[in-house]
Length: 225
Image (cartoon, rainbow, N blue to C red; front, top):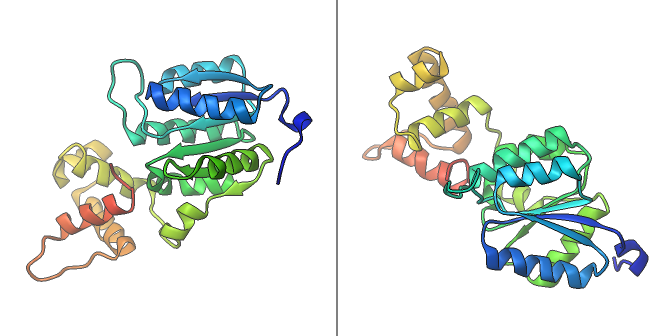
Protein backbone atom coordinates (compact mmCIF):
# COMPACT_ATOMS: atom_id res chain seq x y z
CA UNK A 1 0.00 0.00 0.00
CA UNK A 2 1.48 3.37 -1.05
CA UNK A 3 1.52 5.93 1.74
CA UNK A 4 0.72 9.62 1.24
CA UNK A 5 3.14 12.39 2.14
CA UNK A 6 1.12 13.27 5.25
CA UNK A 7 1.24 9.66 6.42
CA UNK A 8 5.03 9.73 6.08
CA UNK A 9 5.42 12.96 8.07
CA UNK A 10 6.61 13.36 11.63
CA UNK A 11 7.79 9.80 12.09
CA UNK A 12 10.45 9.05 14.71
CA UNK A 13 12.83 6.21 13.87
CA UNK A 14 15.48 4.43 15.95
CA UNK A 15 17.93 2.49 13.75
CA UNK A 16 20.20 -0.04 15.48
CA UNK A 17 23.24 -1.56 13.76
CA UNK A 18 26.90 -1.81 14.77
CA UNK A 19 28.25 -1.55 11.19
CA UNK A 20 28.67 2.12 10.34
CA UNK A 21 28.28 1.65 6.58
CA UNK A 22 25.12 -0.43 6.97
CA UNK A 23 23.74 1.97 9.54
CA UNK A 24 24.28 5.05 7.39
CA UNK A 25 22.97 3.24 4.31
CA UNK A 26 19.77 2.19 6.08
CA UNK A 27 19.19 5.70 7.40
CA UNK A 28 19.68 7.22 3.93
CA UNK A 29 17.19 4.80 2.39
CA UNK A 30 14.65 5.60 5.09
CA UNK A 31 15.23 9.34 4.76
CA UNK A 32 14.42 9.18 1.06
CA UNK A 33 11.25 7.22 1.81
CA UNK A 34 10.30 9.32 4.85
CA UNK A 35 11.80 12.75 4.06
CA UNK A 36 10.15 14.40 7.07
CA UNK A 37 11.13 11.68 9.52
CA UNK A 38 13.36 12.13 12.53
CA UNK A 39 16.19 9.59 12.80
CA UNK A 40 18.20 8.49 15.83
CA UNK A 41 20.87 5.76 15.66
CA UNK A 42 22.45 3.33 18.11
CA UNK A 43 25.40 0.97 17.66
CA UNK A 44 24.86 -1.34 20.64
CA UNK A 45 22.12 -2.63 22.94
CA UNK A 46 23.00 -0.29 25.80
CA UNK A 47 22.79 2.88 23.72
CA UNK A 48 19.63 1.65 21.97
CA UNK A 49 17.84 1.11 25.27
CA UNK A 50 18.97 4.51 26.54
CA UNK A 51 17.72 6.22 23.39
CA UNK A 52 14.40 4.45 23.67
CA UNK A 53 13.80 5.56 27.25
CA UNK A 54 14.48 9.19 26.30
CA UNK A 55 12.05 9.26 23.38
CA UNK A 56 10.08 6.15 22.30
CA UNK A 57 10.06 6.07 18.46
CA UNK A 58 7.28 5.22 16.04
CA UNK A 59 9.47 2.45 14.65
CA UNK A 60 12.65 0.56 15.52
CA UNK A 61 14.74 -0.84 12.68
CA UNK A 62 17.25 -3.22 14.20
CA UNK A 63 19.90 -5.76 13.39
CA UNK A 64 20.22 -8.75 15.72
CA UNK A 65 23.99 -9.17 15.68
CA UNK A 66 24.96 -6.23 17.89
CA UNK A 67 27.26 -5.78 20.89
CA UNK A 68 25.93 -5.33 24.41
CA UNK A 69 28.07 -2.22 24.84
CA UNK A 70 31.21 -0.59 23.45
CA UNK A 71 34.17 -2.95 23.34
CA UNK A 72 32.05 -6.11 23.40
CA UNK A 73 31.78 -8.51 20.45
CA UNK A 74 28.56 -8.42 18.42
CA UNK A 75 26.37 -11.51 18.84
CA UNK A 76 22.88 -12.37 17.56
CA UNK A 77 21.72 -13.42 21.03
CA UNK A 78 22.40 -9.86 22.26
CA UNK A 79 19.87 -8.53 19.78
CA UNK A 80 17.43 -11.28 20.68
CA UNK A 81 17.66 -10.38 24.39
CA UNK A 82 17.21 -6.69 23.61
CA UNK A 83 14.23 -7.46 21.41
CA UNK A 84 12.58 -9.54 24.13
CA UNK A 85 13.08 -6.71 26.64
CA UNK A 86 11.68 -4.11 24.24
CA UNK A 87 8.55 -6.15 23.52
CA UNK A 88 8.01 -6.70 27.25
CA UNK A 89 8.48 -3.04 28.22
CA UNK A 90 6.86 -1.51 25.12
CA UNK A 91 4.13 -3.95 24.01
CA UNK A 92 2.78 -1.60 21.31
CA UNK A 93 6.15 -0.65 19.81
CA UNK A 94 6.45 -1.06 16.02
CA UNK A 95 9.53 -3.11 15.08
CA UNK A 96 11.24 -4.34 11.96
CA UNK A 97 14.14 -6.75 12.31
CA UNK A 98 16.56 -6.27 9.42
CA UNK A 99 19.21 -8.93 9.83
CA UNK A 100 21.12 -11.80 8.30
CA UNK A 101 20.27 -13.82 11.42
CA UNK A 102 16.49 -13.98 11.30
CA UNK A 103 16.54 -17.70 12.16
CA UNK A 104 17.48 -16.75 15.72
CA UNK A 105 14.02 -15.22 16.17
CA UNK A 106 12.65 -18.71 16.67
CA UNK A 107 14.00 -18.42 20.22
CA UNK A 108 11.39 -15.77 21.04
CA UNK A 109 8.58 -16.74 18.71
CA UNK A 110 5.97 -16.83 21.53
CA UNK A 111 6.92 -13.24 22.48
CA UNK A 112 6.58 -12.15 18.86
CA UNK A 113 3.21 -13.87 18.49
CA UNK A 114 1.77 -11.97 21.48
CA UNK A 115 3.35 -8.59 20.65
CA UNK A 116 0.67 -5.93 20.06
CA UNK A 117 2.69 -3.56 17.87
CA UNK A 118 3.67 -3.98 14.26
CA UNK A 119 6.37 -6.61 13.74
CA UNK A 120 7.99 -7.47 10.43
CA UNK A 121 11.16 -9.26 9.38
CA UNK A 122 13.50 -8.36 6.52
CA UNK A 123 16.51 -10.49 5.68
CA UNK A 124 19.41 -8.26 4.62
CA UNK A 125 19.40 -9.98 1.24
CA UNK A 126 16.00 -8.44 0.37
CA UNK A 127 15.78 -5.64 -2.15
CA UNK A 128 15.50 -2.07 -0.89
CA UNK A 129 11.92 -1.82 -2.13
CA UNK A 130 10.88 -5.00 -0.35
CA UNK A 131 12.54 -3.81 2.85
CA UNK A 132 10.69 -0.49 2.64
CA UNK A 133 7.42 -2.32 2.09
CA UNK A 134 7.97 -4.16 5.37
CA UNK A 135 8.86 -0.89 7.07
CA UNK A 136 5.51 0.50 5.91
CA UNK A 137 3.71 -2.60 7.16
CA UNK A 138 5.32 -2.38 10.58
CA UNK A 139 4.37 1.30 10.91
CA UNK A 140 0.80 0.36 10.06
CA UNK A 141 0.82 -2.10 12.97
CA UNK A 142 0.89 -5.17 10.74
CA UNK A 143 2.70 -8.43 11.44
CA UNK A 144 4.72 -10.30 8.82
CA UNK A 145 6.69 -13.24 10.20
CA UNK A 146 6.23 -15.73 7.39
CA UNK A 147 10.00 -16.00 7.03
CA UNK A 148 10.21 -17.34 10.57
CA UNK A 149 7.10 -19.50 10.67
CA UNK A 150 7.66 -20.97 7.24
CA UNK A 151 10.96 -22.44 8.40
CA UNK A 152 10.10 -23.27 11.98
CA UNK A 153 6.42 -24.20 11.87
CA UNK A 154 5.60 -26.50 14.75
CA UNK A 155 8.96 -26.17 16.52
CA UNK A 156 8.30 -25.51 20.20
CA UNK A 157 11.37 -25.04 22.38
CA UNK A 158 11.10 -24.33 26.10
CA UNK A 159 13.40 -21.77 27.81
CA UNK A 160 15.03 -24.41 30.02
CA UNK A 161 15.97 -26.46 26.93
CA UNK A 162 17.58 -23.38 25.39
CA UNK A 163 19.53 -22.88 28.61
CA UNK A 164 20.90 -26.42 28.37
CA UNK A 165 21.94 -25.79 24.76
CA UNK A 166 23.68 -22.56 25.65
CA UNK A 167 25.55 -24.01 28.62
CA UNK A 168 26.59 -27.10 26.67
CA UNK A 169 27.58 -25.68 23.31
CA UNK A 170 28.46 -22.05 23.99
CA UNK A 171 30.03 -22.43 27.44
CA UNK A 172 31.29 -26.00 26.98
CA UNK A 173 29.81 -27.45 30.18
CA UNK A 174 29.17 -31.13 30.87
CA UNK A 175 25.85 -32.33 32.32
CA UNK A 176 27.05 -32.20 35.94
CA UNK A 177 28.14 -28.57 35.59
CA UNK A 178 24.94 -27.73 33.70
CA UNK A 179 22.91 -29.20 36.58
CA UNK A 180 24.84 -27.07 39.08
CA UNK A 181 24.36 -23.92 37.02
CA UNK A 182 20.62 -24.53 36.67
CA UNK A 183 20.17 -25.81 40.25
CA UNK A 184 18.59 -29.05 39.05
CA UNK A 185 19.58 -32.72 39.07
CA UNK A 186 21.66 -34.38 36.37
CA UNK A 187 18.68 -36.63 35.75
CA UNK A 188 16.59 -33.54 34.92
CA UNK A 189 19.32 -32.31 32.56
CA UNK A 190 19.17 -35.65 30.73
CA UNK A 191 15.38 -35.32 30.63
CA UNK A 192 15.74 -31.90 28.98
CA UNK A 193 18.16 -33.35 26.43
CA UNK A 194 15.64 -36.05 25.56
CA UNK A 195 12.79 -33.57 25.12
CA UNK A 196 14.96 -31.20 23.10
CA UNK A 197 16.20 -33.97 20.80
CA UNK A 198 12.64 -35.13 20.22
CA UNK A 199 11.57 -31.57 19.29
CA UNK A 200 14.51 -31.30 16.87
CA UNK A 201 13.93 -34.76 15.41
CA UNK A 202 17.31 -36.05 16.57
CA UNK A 203 17.38 -39.71 17.62
CA UNK A 204 20.07 -42.32 18.33
CA UNK A 205 21.75 -43.45 15.13
CA UNK A 206 24.44 -46.12 15.19
CA UNK A 207 27.86 -44.68 14.49
CA UNK A 208 26.80 -41.08 15.16
CA UNK A 209 27.25 -38.97 18.30
CA UNK A 210 23.79 -37.77 19.31
CA UNK A 211 25.11 -34.67 21.07
CA UNK A 212 26.99 -33.59 17.95
CA UNK A 213 23.87 -34.19 15.87
CA UNK A 214 21.84 -32.17 18.40
CA UNK A 215 24.28 -29.27 18.20
CA UNK A 216 24.18 -29.36 14.40
CA UNK A 217 20.37 -29.29 14.27
CA UNK A 218 20.17 -26.58 16.95
CA UNK A 219 22.51 -24.35 14.94
CA UNK A 220 20.55 -25.02 11.75
CA UNK A 221 17.36 -23.92 13.51
CA UNK A 222 18.98 -20.77 14.93
CA UNK A 223 18.67 -21.86 18.54
CA UNK A 224 22.36 -21.24 19.20
CA UNK A 225 24.91 -19.10 17.38
